Length: 160
Image 1 (cartoon, rainbow, N blue to C red):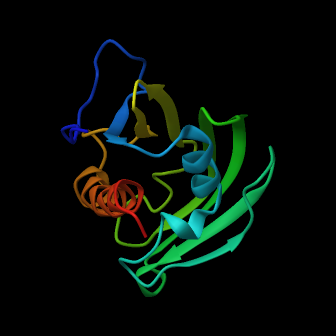
Image 2: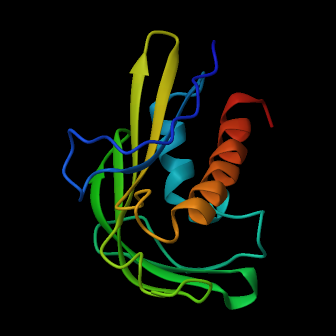
Image 3: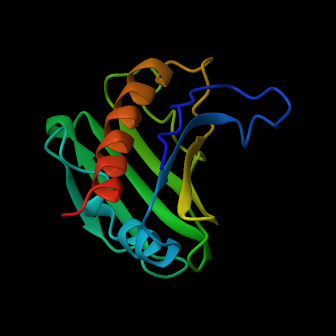
């Protein structure tokens, strides 16, 4: 198994809606196991900034709220796409990122995972669609996403 390089980019061939921060890695875990872990938000979007996560995310239209950094980051997500063992997409319905000039900058963006089995490993691709270099949050938010994704990668590439 090889580690895939972390990728942070704006792909100009994609529309602005789907362009954004991306992180890809390989894991020996099977798509079903990865998929189930990702639906439990606390398993991958916690551990860095004193996060509180409320709500659920197991079926279409489920909503959850994410609060971190003693309240400096609040966002509410709705599960909008679900392809078992393959794809999960949340739409950000509401955001209050108090460290930004435009505290609602995440509104309408999408947080997405795609999972594909390739031989002896699975490829996990995370993307925050709409988190592009031109917006204020890009530097701080992409740095935080890198931290969360590295934690997720460690969790999925080691035996625990």
